[in-house]
Structure formats: C-alpha cells, structure tokens
Image 1 (cartoon, rainbow, N blue to C red):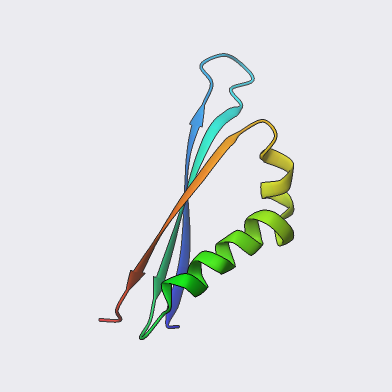
Image 2 (cartoon, one colour):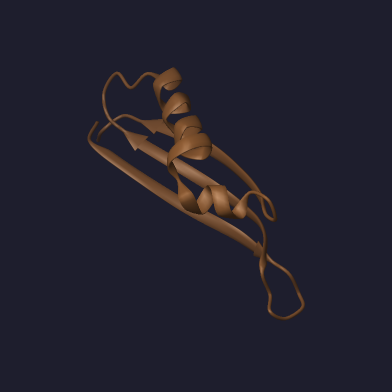
Length: 73
C-alpha cells in the first residue's frame, strides 16, 4: 500500500452542547493490487475490536463508513 487516509464528516445537533449525531468515515487506500475484502475486514476489526473511540461513540452516534481504493499516480 502506498497511502492510507481517513476523512471524518460529522453532523452536529443544533442545540448546545452541539454534540455529534452522525459521523461518516471515509477510508481512502492507495496502492497496487489492494484486495477490497481485506480493506473491508480491516475496517470491521477497527469497528468491532480495536478502536476505542468507535466503541465509545457507537451507543449514541450513528457511525457509517465507506472506502475507496485508488491506484497510485
């Protein structure tokens, strides 16, 4: 893999303290011969096992994700 980037897009409530109500995570992988199933599995492991922020927020925030696989330029 040549590159990996995560972009987070959030929606906040209109009322104070304006907490996040939804978060869309965008995983961007750049490289040659990246297996989409491996990317999906890595995201699932982060979501279900390794990411403490995801674990903490999932009870109160709608968290969704997508991923893109790009070839290097």
